[in-house]
Image 1 (tube, rainbow over the protein chains, first blue to last red):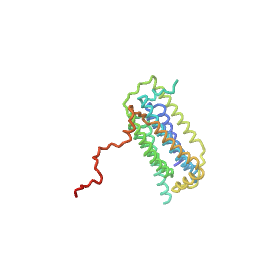
Image 2 (image 1 turned 90 degrees about the vertical axis):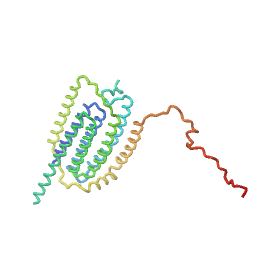
Image 3 (image 1 turned 60 degrees about the vertical axis):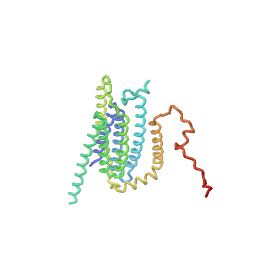
Image 4 (image 1 turned 180 degrees about the horizontal axis):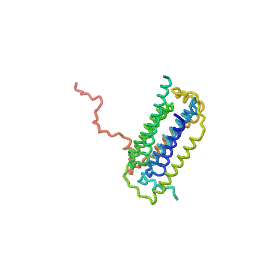
Length: 101
Length: 206
């Protein structure tokens, strides 16, 4: 078991998350892709924590913080999605042009 | 004998790493590519659980448990509720030349993956030979939280409170009743009229 395996796996997950973030049209799927990317970052942090800093595991502390932020982000994101859905009656990303001039 | 046991442990680790990584990648591809979004949400739970297994492989039991509790128990359930609340079968109007953006995004993602992989492979990592914290990790994390990461810890709690209030305010339905209820009626409890009984009424003939 080596650090590189975990880092390559996390890189693959991050790239899948970016693809889903850019190419999907459902808003909820965009939120799911953001969660995938946050998990890839967490996997990176945990790999560094185990292989480079095993005594005072700062990577685990940081990944706990990232999990907290991800939970808050998901709650606020879903609230925004609900409010936009009530106003525009759609979940299509291509029709959300409120901030477009 | 010791060497054989070591090889066995190493083999189990590699096999479980391969299985968990395969489940995670296939699940993530399913989350992104499947057309039914409910399947995507359940596959997302599978991805989270396999990532928690990878954390256990990395000697981090506490964060693995936190991952299962928070991601599978809270975030994924929240996403499922969101899917149910905005449940609408709508066929998205096709955008012109949408395949160009998909191909371009795929190319950029593949290029980014190649770049990251070459960077990871070529960089000389300074692997520490010290034994991992293992089961004492939770004590070390607690000491970090209350000594050198105290300020971020408290800020995280404030941020959670702000996110709670903000989510409630954003998702609240603005319901204003059309006819105002009169205050006297609103403040009295509905109860049936009682018959008045005269207190202390005794028959004087006795």
